Image 1 (cartoon, rainbow, N blue to C red):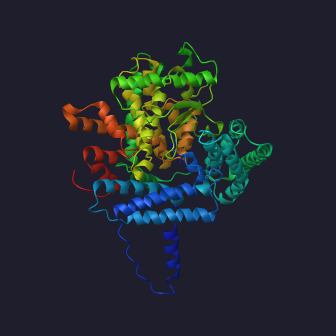
Image 2: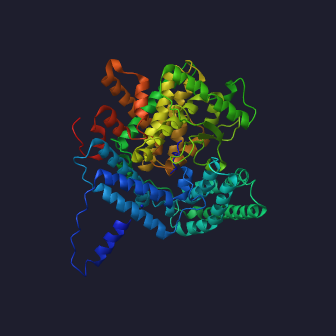
Image 3: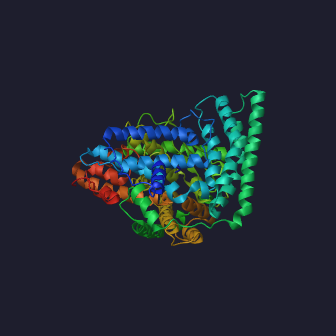
Length: 587
């Protein structure tokens, strides 16, 4: 996916505190009035207002999620807007943190924990990482997603979307000028990734965009062409500007163990610290390397198109062959009664990955239905077809696409996120917790193996082992990079040696880990939590246990932390109590 995929997807109280602190020498301190108690109803009102504010404040993200009221606008990256947005989030977070939830019903306490973690996730980057000042990818990503979000679905007539694209492209040169003023301390690694993306963006703005330009009048077409040329020129100029100063830029630095642990506990609600997570990665990596060694032919775990009888001749045939295997998996799930497929599920398609997204998504990414989408369709973007490619994901997709297809489609991301999008509870509908999302998808890979989808010793069965192996390697790289124990080069080498990846995939994986702390731990950590919960659920149900019922119960509540799901399914709050450092009641 990921980009949960999600696009992907903040200081009034602090400013006021500083102002009062600065004035204290001239006047006696006034007592701070006690914060008004927060009720469950007010919590939900605050959350609703926050989601509405997000849609207005981040129009590109809103378009990506299926809300199209401001498709002609980009985000405001002026220092005043950045500070204002950060202050808004911080003030709201302080209000939610200060709530006394003693005596609240269990469901409301859960919603409070979830909304608080959402706000922590929005506050942390501006407080710790300062992305607008350090990461040029912010601006290239805004530009590419501004257009991509208008193309991926036919939510409106092509002309309407083309006019919106024209307006957004007209605003891009000014955004890039603002970016150059904002980037006080750009990080060299992030700059190189941004350069690669900016110089790969042309097909998205030319051939892809032109698919919706057919109904424009001559004047409108000329306006679009002019805006596109200026936008692409500004992005190329941005790449040149970054490259010129690349040698002088700040080397990538880890956030440190304290900040990393803060993310684990306060944003992900994990009852683990960085050393717990790193140890889990070591254990799982050792286990899956051993499982590979137990294969009659261990080389089967390394995808090899040469073993395939019928190699697709071109990109379209490849995508069609990939997509056609989904029905086989759906039939298997229904036959075994492994999960219930709701009637509102839309279509799931395989598409080519835009080149602009390749530097940090070498294996492609999932684009699930957006939370505001009018239709329920979703896509998985796979790299450009090349039977001679060394890219792990392409080789795997040619030999047997089912393990990755199951991860991205059904029963993985597409199914799980589609269900989450249909929840009535707004806070839970908006919660997109990566550890559960990726953990569920990876759990599904091995569950299908153990339930008999793949023949023993087959390429598909062996691929499942390799996929878990390199997801385990991801933990080591993510944790050790961000806590400062490893260099970037050590991370790449670990992916190659421990994870069994080729150099291209390893470099892309390491870059993704450096850019998105904690994302790479999601897969194995979430899978391990789900499997532990499965065992406890089985013991609790006894003779009434059914695996398909566990799956239905697990994904019925949205993309929530497993620590919360354990409280919901087993009435055991001990894991969320450990993560939150609070008591919520007896087991």
